Image 1: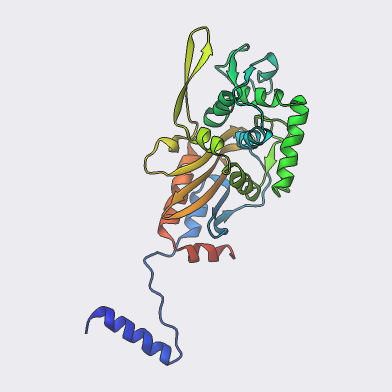
Image 2 (image 1 turned 180 degrees about the vertical axis):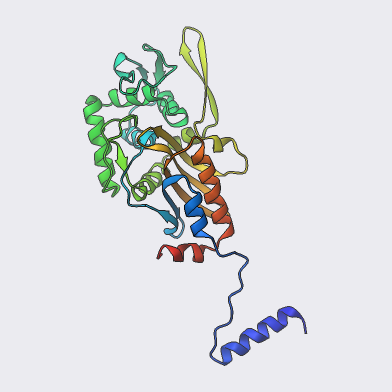
Length: 291
């Protein structure tokens, strides 16, 4: 008797006897304890966007500094303000980081369009460009920060707080669940998606000088990753941070990793998360988190 026919016959017989047929799956039972131990991130959240279900969760309600993940909210406020993207903005002394003395290749006096400033903020996490975007908002930085917090409340990001547009302040905080909401909102804007996932770009910074900038997320250059939206971040208080919208194993996923404690650990953590998704059944993964 052919194997396939026998399997159907056995299953039908079990049903007739009131017994459940065994479930056959190509997926292995995920070893959550091992991935919990392997992840360097203090906070991790993976959400299946199509079904709005949790695939993996670790310390998801911890309120953490989010470093340059802040720039996604900066971009969202800029994109929804309706300000002209071709308007030329100027880097001023006020845009220089005197909080952490981070480096920048944008000298004071550099003139770039609002679109170019946004591009640099998202792709290369350029702090002076992000601050200039806030400073050139109607009403200046105070009005921009109010708009950031107003947008957070409108999105239901109940635990988030923003005090400036770059992420250099550790007072910019959020939970991982809030950041999934931010990712969803930012994904509605093609300009944000494009700038955040651009690999490399050359910018004319004046006086005949051109500067080449690359994406701060090394995974963008990997052809085996399908990343639709991405932002990295780092300050000492926040550790290595990474948020992404990506497509893995036929599923659209949001991934949030906060406070990884080793250099490049956010990339390794993302790879671990990917292997978990590829090796586990959606039903099994969700069951662990009560979804």
